[in-house]
Image 1: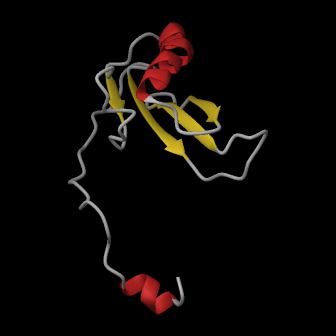
Image 2 (image 1 turned 135 degrees about the horizontal axis):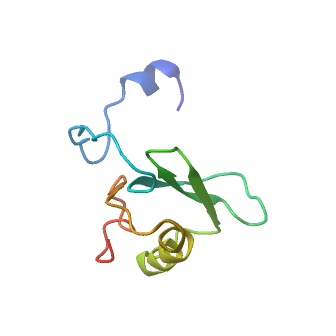
Length: 106
């Protein structure tokens, strides 16, 4: 953080990034979805996190605000209420494999 040269030349800390995988072209809305959290946002009514769920076919999105990262159980319940009941079950879910997305529910 002290200088640009240091920031650019630092080696990556953490797990190595896995290989990219190609994704087939979706053929129907809400069969292939991507989801992730946007975190550390400025507070809006106490919410600092947004869960994004995006349809890969139409690019339609759902944005669900949170005050803190939900548990896998809470996320599964919200998924059923906000995505499944409206669009049915997706064929494929793309995520960064965060613990909430890799729980037994998925």
